[in-house]
Image (cartoon, rainbow, N blue to C red; front, side, top):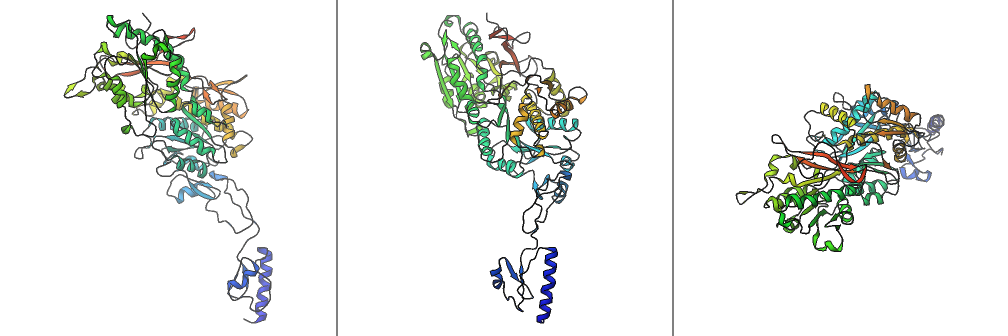
Amino acid sequence: MSPRSVRSLLLLCSSLCLALFSCSIVRDLSVDQCKTDGDCRKFGDYSCSSENVCVANMTNTSGSGSGGTESEGGTKPEGGTAGAPVVAECTKNKECIDDHDGEPYICQEEKCVPLTIPEHCPYVVAGTEENPTEYLTKPGKPIIFGAYVPIDASNPEGHPYTLIYKFALEEFMQATLGGVDGHPFVMVLCQSTKPDLAASVAHLVDTVQVPAILATLPSADLSTVYNEVKARPRPVFLLGPFEADSSLISQDESGLLWHMLGPVTDLLPTYVPLFELAESYVRNRIRKPVDRDKPVKVAIVNTDLTYSLDLANSLPSKVKVNGAFLNASTNRNNYQRIQVQVAGKDSGSINTSGVITALKDPGSADIVVSLGGAEFIDPTLTAIQGPKALDQSPFYILSPRNAFDPSLSMPSFYFGMEVDGMQQTGMTDVDKIMAGVNYASVEDSALYDKYLADIQARYPEQKGLESRENMYDAAYFMLYSLTAALLSPAGEEFDGEDVVNGMSSLIGGPGSVEVTVGLGENAGMVNTVLGNLRNRAQVKLVGTLGPPDFKPDTGARNSPGSVWCVSRPQSGSPSVSFDMLRMDPKSPEQLKLSGSSFCYPNFFPLP
């Protein structure tokens, strides 16, 4: 090419680049401006073209958008910065779903982001059974929150927790005709069984960017999740359906952790009169007359989990036996405490041999208090009680965790173990020498009864849906807290602190409007709640657990206890009967009978 031709080309390129790209070549008009890319480095980020001209590697310095489009579930464009153009991978959630064979993806900042990851967060509720990703393709940006549940990869909907959360979300989406102001609500479910919490939190908070999580986790795991979330710059609200404990309450300095049930120490007032009943029953019904006046011995069996330690540390100074507090000097020889290590262990590796050795002999304890879980029921209880005749048996006070042990509802459990070919007979009447403590349900059960009937009709083959009202309530408190945050000045860019403010708007106060969880009459309750939240009104969200009696300073609920027992009909299976004895509001230190009689005679009232 002639020098004139080169100059003409440079002038043409200069004109074009000024018009289109704000100039992207260096106007050095020598015939051979460069021969290699190295010759162009003096100008900056330039390379040598085939015409021996230094050309800038940039093609656009006018700025480019880095966000998606808000329509059909994408995220808003956030504006760009000077530099190379970012080729948008997507602008709509549907594009990502279609590009990934129908899997649940969202378009976030012009990139396709998966809502699930194998093993850690493998399941999502993002649509109907007919269209599993329907919610993601609605016009508004989806409001996505996380939830921890036990997940079996082969049957992800097989656990009651999953079905209860899904049921509540389906009710909400149906009542709102697909979401709030066009924004659908979507739930990402992560594994709570042997979880990799660092991986699941990273997915929920960093990748999906959820503002809130239903943290259905035991205390130690919930503590880990809280610390993981706290380390992130963006606030995330955590709502635990289970009980609070001292470590969780003291750990939460930010107010971002709330609990549907109060600390186990709320149950202490229930243990006080129950101990009085148990001592009377031991002396007057279990012991032989000649032994009735001997001191009653107590054994407390706790684990190294915080909730269990909280109770074990508090009970001895609250309950009385032999006319004195359990930790009194006069009971020094009548009280023993045995601890079982369970933290971080699989059920098969928990060693309860120390408990069995200490309590298997007749007379070793007259009242045995379990503050643990499944490890006490089987094999511990069967090993302790199996060899004993009824008049040598202790009375067993079982824990809130024991109330849901499936063994207690199995007829075979009451036949005990077989040792050396001989069936142990001590378990035959064990139901008549036990009672337990748990959080009390609401006395007016109409709301709970409706919820239970509806969810059992929805999942007629599913077992274990009973007495899980804290899960159902937690789902609704989460949904309405997210709604209040969405309707706040922050709009769809809200974070966990806005969700906490939303939670605070649901717990009543002066002039608050009383509403309930669930659909209400003619499915109108959800829209009633939304109308009040839209008007910034304070509401009192009454759940199947009862009024929202939360303590805003701790995030825990005031949760009184009640007494449960096992009913064994002459025909049919045994079952746990909850709330058989409740705290008497007229006599706050006494229990009252809820029904016509206790599970077995001569226990209540005191003779």
